[in-house]
Length: 389
Image (cartoon, rainbow, N blue to C red; front, side, top):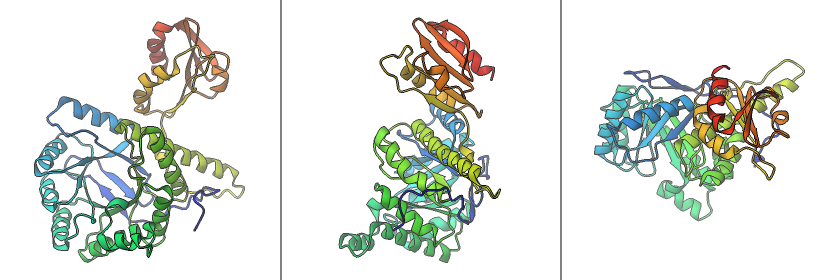
């Protein structure tokens, strides 16, 4: 088996077909695959309650933060109708996640839904799937084949349990089996995902599939865990795949907020982007690797972990400003540092930074102190300087 972590950024993007999400009705178009930037998506965590004045504002903020697709669980006909009404009200591409009952998929397609996610592990009767594909094709709605390690088709699950088949191979087999049926149905607007909670199995499955198929890949680790554990596992799986040009859209699945999922995905893509830039800088022949992770650029937030000499509450300040900063459409670096001893120096390259000493907060630009204010005025002063960038 190939090593889990590559040494170099290969930059060799997979040659995939392009699937266009949205673009019909009033929905923003989001292309996935081909040479397009990797797309970030997340999933709505709460029970859908609409009309609700709060949900539209939050969806808009998630889109500003970088989520180009937002997926909703649709467990019933009633939920399909509620999601459909929400889809009429926003231009953001909404994805309907359907399990078990194909009639729910048929109903949700009566509304301006941008994409479906189907799990062949629990909707497996072919004539029912064909009805969904027939209607989705007429409506111009792409479908994601979502394979999860926990819901493999029964025959493949049995072969895994007897040791005849590795789980990663079973994930690929399930995906390819479904793709063959989609081809028979002449349905081409399809994205594939194969997710496991195991990092090496996720990596192996996506590598195998990428070497044999041209369907765009949605990559992620399923049930990755709470914030810290989920971030580590997701980064360990997604970074090497992205560095190998594998992955056209990503979700970091966390037992945490959708906003933190988007931030995590941006940071993972940002690391792959930095790696591409570093490797390209080392090239002496002038041949640069293709990099599709650059679409995650935006505000880069640097903050100190805090220690005993801390003179400024970096944790509280970062918590107050994090989502707002990630929603800004600016390619800048922001530094939140804990003490005046090292703060400005360590954040010398930051466009804007803040730290504290005693009762004063110091705001600095590119390593130089720009102004000192009372701690109580720190947020307002920081906002003024931020607007001036």
